[in-house]
Amino acid sequence: MPLSLPIEAEANKLLERSPLALLIGMVLDQQVTMEKAFSSPYELQLRLGHELDARELAAYDPAALTEIFSQRPALHRFPKANAKRVQEVCQLLVERYDGDAARLWTQARTGPELFRRVSELPGFGKQKAQIFVALLGKQFGVQPAGWREAAGMFGDADAHYSVADITDEASLLKVRAHKQEMKAAAKTRTS
Image (cartoon, rainbow, N blue to C red; front, side, top):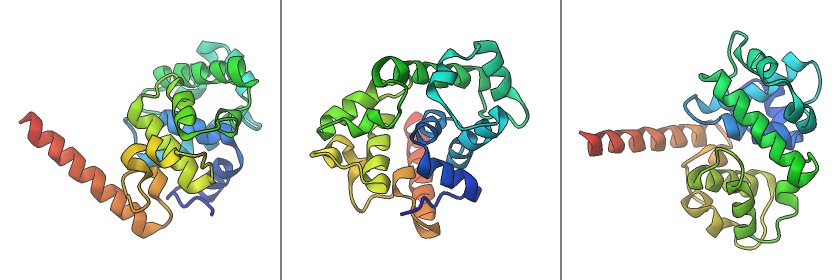
């Protein structure tokens, strides 16, 4: 099933064909809109002038990578911190998975193992790791035994909680409504 994020068609196609782009989108999915996070790998690729490569990004000069992230429009609200985070993720991919982002999930035998591997990525706390496991399972057919349980509430088949659940305009609206409810509830708790 093709991704149906409300971003440029070429950006969606990149996410479908490039495991690294998908992972970078998830890295960037914080403190910016989902659309911004998941379209930024495509913009990064355009700025580099070629396909994304974990080895190249892992070895990139940090200041130069920050500059690429900072060009207008910036790839993230916090370009310096996120250039560093993307580089750290790529370095881990090179160290543990020979630079192949897909090996992060294709070699996981169980849902808990997949969750553990994703959780070890820089910047991936429990919730982000669960969302990524759900995204892989629901949209990319990565479904080792126990993946739904490992994804927590995000693995629920009828959920509309995150990017993992967006397949069309209606599901996008449900995810946005859920996020607004969560923000309102959090605001009420802190008042």
